[in-house]
Image (cartoon, rainbow, N blue to C red; front, side, top):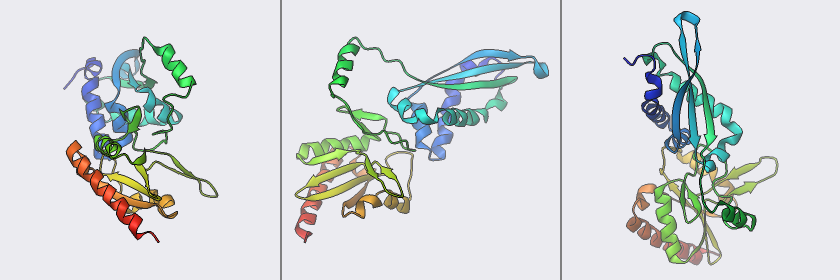
Length: 258
């Protein structure tokens, strides 16, 4: 059994297992936070109570895009991680967790001023992946955000087809019941609008009823919703075949349109 003082050395091992517990629960948000983080621990206090307790702080530095997405819930995220980490403290004598501090990672760039000017001029601005959810968009391709590699594969395949489409757009519905969703892709061709959903792409799982409910604000307005398993596009070759199939589906829906 590890002795007092090993907590700092073992923090990576501990967080591996914390992430694994979140994955077993299907909690993709916390798996994303931990899997893209720089994690460290330091002894920040000592208490003489009950023979002495060593107090450690845990520091989690996360990508800035993820930090912005969870900024409104940092306290609850920290508390949830601290509670999960606490399940392993029985292996460490006289050890307390003082705090779990979450902060954005520092990014160093020699051209940061040019990047800032580009942002002021509107270059690189995106509303993608900014909805607080249990499935964080943490992968990037061509300056766009995605939630999985299969999504990136189908994105590249659709782009090669020359079709108009939007990856991970934000849709709002106001009124008495405010709704905000992020479908995986919206495709538009010959007057047909199709919502493409890639299912089973992360540890976050939805039932069929939950998936249908999430896209109902689109299907109720006549948008066609097509769902495919992530295994249909987990390679670039398979993604190209799926893109061909989707292209054919759009043509079929066009022919069947009144």
